[in-house]
Length: 103
Image (cartoon, one colour):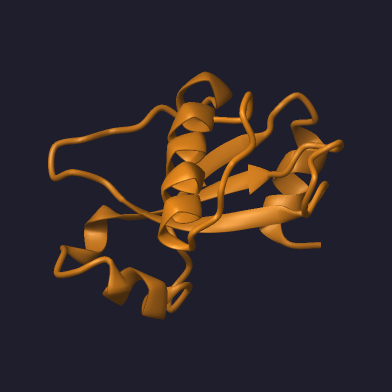
């Protein structure tokens, strides 16, 4: 069981978390985010809710860069809106139309 799966198993009320990436984790994706200090790298981890149209129950690990002076609270109320915004931007980048009521 991965550390992320174990986290969600221990914290069944949580749907998201933020953590420092493991050495080498998602390096290619982070490079694509442009020049940045490595200590700003974080992984947003999202347990896709049951009932979602795609990938329900899967755990997604999303590369994320903090601003130099930013801290992000490790709580669903803070993380879920950030993940939603990231996913909506990804939809635009890939030309996916989001049905009304899901934006």
